[in-house]
Image (spheres, rainbow, N blue to C red):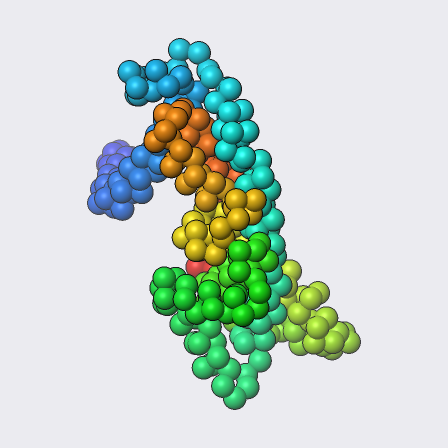
Amino acid sequence: MNQKARTPNVKTRQLTSALLKELKRIHLYILPVLWALFNIYCVIWITLTSLKTNRELATNPWGLPEAPQFENYTRAWESANLGLAFRNSVIVTGASVLLILVFCAPAAYALSRFKFKGSGWLTALFIAGAGVPAAMLIIPLFGLTQNLGLNDSLPGLILIYSVVSIPFTMFVLTGFYSTLPSEFEEAARIDGCTEFGVFWRVMLPLVSPGLITVAIFNFVTIWNEYALALVFLQDPEKLPLARALYGITSSMQYTGDWASLFAAVVIVMVPSLAVYALLSERLIEGITAGALK
């Protein structure tokens, strides 16, 4: 009888102890949860505001729209020429991310899997570039693109974005490659694979979580980048969305069409949110795999 009475008490103490441990760790979740709720609220508020009239925006900025004004999106798309800017952003972002992966995937593989004289210094030099502020690169990059005849052009901006993104990409990919077991390479070589075959058929698929991770981060960064586009692009026909949005903001001083401005902000946000929504699981898998390795 005593044994039966003690069993529930032991279970109760274990549950209480586990609950107290979780309560002690609750402070670790407070800030992330509050930050997530704040961002969700901002996205919802901006979206709802983009469906209001300018009168509603002025008189009741925190309320719901009386009737959705979808023409705000049409007006923002046509009057601010966002269609052309959207196309430019797709070209610049897609080409930059592709160029980054094409260059960094084999470079990170070579530096992490082959040991040669100066390989450690070369890897450190790549990664050290992440500590250089982007503002310090503007003048030398401007001179370089001017000498190459790429100023005020989409290819020039693609080249700049690709170069600036190399340090972060190399840092992530070298970490993934360096932790892969060497037995995979040895088995592939025994089966007759060349060095390129080992990289292409074996190592590259194994590091795909890292490739997806850096692709997502670089996509979001380049899609929303503004400062470099402001310096290196002046032709209105070549502006990406971030620069076009700035033009809308300036024109609002004269037109007062703030509802269309919020609609333009939603148009700029949608691709980034869609990428996160569609690839969030792969992103988490990539980050978790890198952490575990």
